[in-house]
Length: 96
Image (cartoon, rainbow, N blue to C red):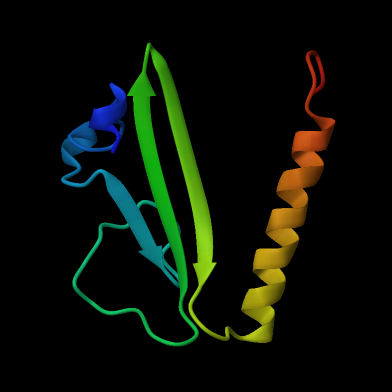
């Protein structure tokens, strides 16, 4: 899809990365490589994708819950999402 839009994958080839999409499972912090290991009930999966188009580097990650996750994991996901939106709301030129 990235190539069909005239963009270039952001991660593939960067520091030897073999993948366009990065997948982190559970305790893996970020930028894990995809594998053939199936996801299971209760896993938390972060999917990260980057692309370069017209000199702009876009990078997006999203966390998915596989089935029902532990309450403490659900709380972490919810609180970090809330913090993201509060940060976006506070973002403006000159604000630090």
